Length: 102
Image 1 (cartoon, rainbow, N blue to C red):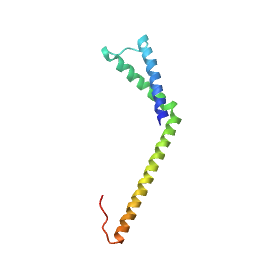
Image 2 (cartoon, rainbow, N blue to C red):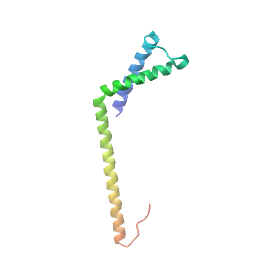
Image 3 (cartoon, helix red, strand yellow):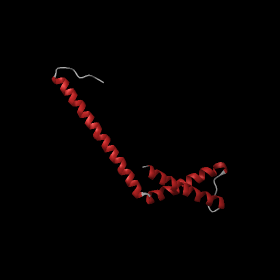
Image 4 (cartoon, helix red, strand yellow):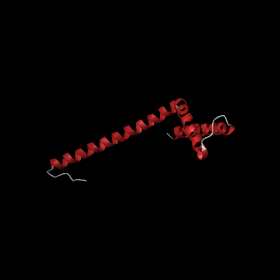
C-alpha cells in the first residue's frame, strides 16, 4: 500500500514539475492574480489522476488484494470472537446463571 502511495505521489510531483515549467515558459496560461500556485497544483492533479489510473493499474490491484485480505482476516476474527461469546453465554445459561452484560 505504501509503495502505491509513493508511486502515485511521484507521478503527481512529476506532473507538478512539468506543469510548472509549462506555465512559467508561457505555453500554458497563468492563473489570475495570486492564484497561480493553486492553478499549477490543480492542473497537476487533473493531469496526474488519469496517468496514475492507467500506469499504476497492477500496483493498485496488488494493494486492493492486500486490503481485501486484511478485511477478511478481521471479519474472521470478529466471527470467532462472536461465536466464543455465544458459547460462553450458552454455558452460563445451562448452569442457570444469567450472562454478564459488558
